[in-house]
Image 1 (cartoon, rainbow, N blue to C red):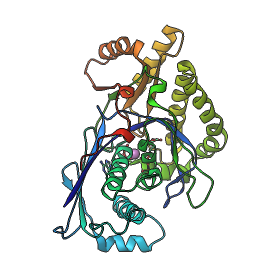
Image 2 (image 1 turned 90 degrees about the vertical axis):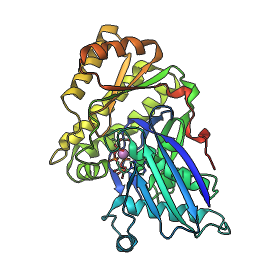
Image 3 (image 1 turned 30 degrees about the vertical axis):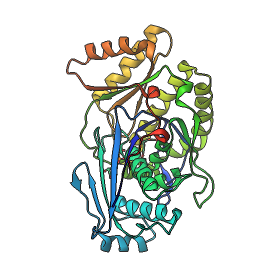
Image 4 (image 1 turned 90 degrees about the horizontal axis):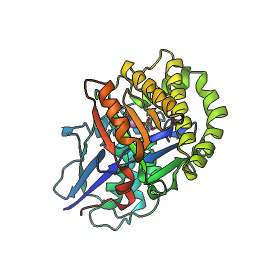
Length: 357
Ligand code: ADP
Ligand code: DP6
Ligand code: CO
């Protein structure tokens, strides 16, 4: 018997990935950029056990067994379109690819596996659970089958955003131009220690599962939004260079402006999707207003909001304003939200995460 456990963090995009040009290979229509949080507040934890006694592969997510139906999987593997159950397809594909890269003489390579994964934060609520979840799965499998080297390309096949969680610090996922997807990989642009004062506050407005998962939401946007094309072709190429520069220069004012504009444009695309897929709610919009009032009062951008595909706010800010901003949030929103303060640059990036064998 062999057992491994891995822990992987979420990443919060400041330039959002939204839309695929290849559904099967998960190739995006635009570059994206994010910071990977530390694992001390929000993370996925995955344990994989392999044993000659296991009769079949098993998968539990947050304590609930998930179907691992191989008969159905066969159908979906023979179809060129990824149209059945995305997560089973991704799971089998990932296991297959990791095994393909490992030393085939490993004595346990043909044993069945049991995977048990848990998130310590809301799943499918727009807080990047798929990013942490699939990065963790691939990382744990890589440890189990003793493979080294690039794994962000395999993580991407689980969930696009997962390829960025494979690295710590500031990470850019380049969309790539090849149809094979070989060049669609994540690369760190700056380490966590580059901007040590940076903090992320996660304001949990609603932890329910969202109505439209990211995969479905972005497919509808690609099919129906006219704005999405303008964004990927005419906005992102310049915007990603600008934020890259702002991060390298530690220019918070500029970084914040781009981050907020990009979040707003992403949600404008959601509204431009037909029928619209609305993720933000009234509380989310109240947070947006609060941040703009605060920045106006400070005569400079001191705080930046960004919203993924859900109503929950991720607030980027520097340590120097954390306490003041937090007390304003607590004052304005009388029913306290679940607030997670992620001191992420003091945490371990994924590549230093402890793996128990
Ligand atoms: P989120 O905004 O939380 O990333 P998504 O709609 O992108 O939401 O993805 C949610 C899906 O990701 C879940 O329904 C599940 O299939 C998958 N997922 C989430 N956490 C894990 C995990 N720890 N291990 C494997 N898959 C996970
Ligand atoms: C809004 O990576 O969850 O969080 O590739 O279909 O699994 P799939 O989608 P996913 O989409 C993330 C969308 C986002 C923006 C981002 O993280 O860049
Ligand atoms: Co996701």
